[in-house]
Length: 484
Ligand code: NAD
Image (cartoon, rainbow, N blue to C red; front, side, top):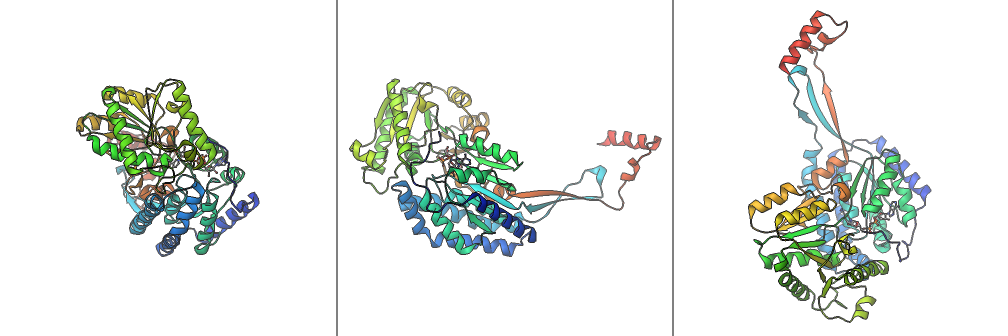
């Protein structure tokens, strides 16, 4: 998605760059004093985090709704609170196993030595999060960071100042600044934050800012997990159950009014099915949201500039010959006043339209003709590697072909978006949609140093390779070449 300057006031408090340095130094000092917290201490932190978030659920939902203009409490519970609760429960159940040292095999020539892998906390983890799911995307990396025994500093987005301030206040009730710290403020603070010498930096946001953050972190050789965006395709096969596909695509596209990194960005299907699909999708959207203006269930677009960006995408497509179909018949001025955009299906698109080039990040859905699976796969391969890919159908051979021949961060089959909240599989992008992954054990590993330890035996035969090199050495090397 194209980055836009915020047209909202910043958070009520702004963290000064000097404070960032002070907090980082304090976190590092505290970490060095206790570099490997035991499970009792990590468990207590995860439980504190859970209790703080759940204990302030209503305030978070209200703050997020105020930041957006409107967002249903239910959406905040579904997409933020429950995801966090699930992530913490999973971490509480499995971290004791993940944090154990484990034996690793030893190759024949090194026996009877032993190999061990020791997961070790990294130190201080930096977390930069976006506005679209402002609580979940700040807290999910924090769960991994704390479970892995680290300390963390968080910089939430300037587009959600109320939620950021609340997060700062709520986390301060259970954590000291040298354990977990929330920095607030605008891009200047975010920029200073990304230049700090963290032990690992997790950035969730746009690909364009991801490039800047990756560069800033690279200056300090800070390892990064980049959770970025992109255009996530949805392929609908002839074998799909259309009723099921329509409901799930409408839901995945309209949750948070399409302001979801893994929302279906565009649909690929045979031309002959496009009209029926578009009509049914519009009907489904009207069933979900009989009106859009004034409907508390329907999320507003975060800011005026983002609303204008979506209107611009539509205008550009229309000027270049696309057909636009909009759900409902709400008053346009009222919609604009509330920054609400109904589901809008865009057909007859061409590749030169901006809507086919940029991540949409709103409730506009191009439906593009693609006659065969090979055509669809070619379209996907020609684009940048997406964060998510969706395939609807029952034909297993085609499903397997999609899975083996397309590259995307993750996939949901006969569903949209829900692969993201599966704690037992990694979540992350590939190429321009991101690098690295987290959630569950994958987060634990991203925020740990998996230290390889070789324990030599007193019976080691390594002395046979000590200099000076003689005939005996050559015999030994010959034997090794034969048997390795
Ligand atoms: P953004 O890139 O504009 O901002 C993300 C964060 O970066 C914010 O906290 C912001 O303060 C900070 N930032 C801005 N400029 C910076 C700079 N120069 N240096 C350092 N930090 C800076 O993204 P956004 O608009 O908040 O979110 C939308 C984008 O995020 C979309 O592209 C979406 O696909 C992506 N996203 C990805 C995921 C994922 O998990 N992969 C999840 C949600 C959103």
